[in-house]
Length: 305
Image 1 (spheres, helix red, strand yellow):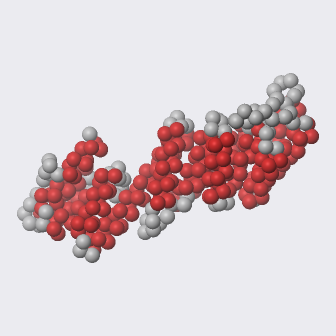
Image 2: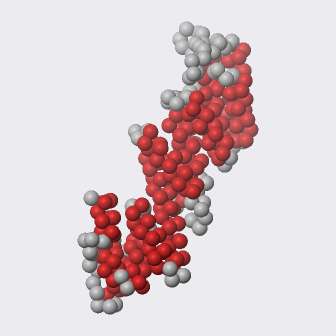
Image 3: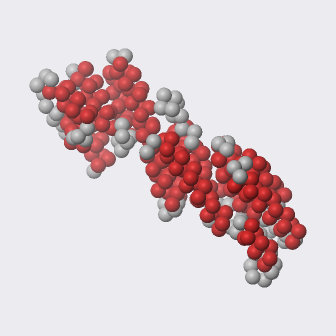
């Protein structure tokens, strides 16, 4: 799946996930009516909301409940109409005017989502981080971390540009898998992290090819070596092995060229890169044979066991 199509799929999945968050909190108009009719429990009264940090909020009067419900529903209406900028402002007002209500908690998350949808990724990250800081144990904390990671992921740059943003996105995605391994977000985060690693490897390949083209084979080898050692599970590995074969042959280091070609054939026997590497090595009557002392063999063993 391409980066672009993956992002389109992500936005659909994210909206669906948010729907579950919203409905889970009775955020529909019917849910609000039930909340106002009977309060937070079955006694007809609204219980105190205790935010993290130990501050006990005062009871909300009925008029206050109706006010926050109206404001929050207004934000939902704007969001459902695709007016994410106005929705974000309304949810911000919920948080500002009713800071101790449980709807303020949800409003922070809704601000993050609205900002994400309008591609205001800094705002999305800031709101989601505020949520995780204020409510680290909240049941929707995994979703907030997911929003942070996606906001970083959406800003991944073209392979020809600096890849520090990609590294930042991968780090955020891996944090989700580490913190919440049993959530639906973990599997998606792992998949996106793989795409991120592929982008980082592609950047190394791009630089390596440039060096080889300039005749600086040692500099090129160092870039291809990084792909083998750090990004071996990416789609860039077959070409990296071929480029190593090519560069080592150009330097007359035939043993390493044979090893690179042999490892390529063992792991990717049907690859076009192997066919080219085989032809390159056998031109001088050599065969692809792996040297057990080569760093290439050791690098593959460290990953495959």
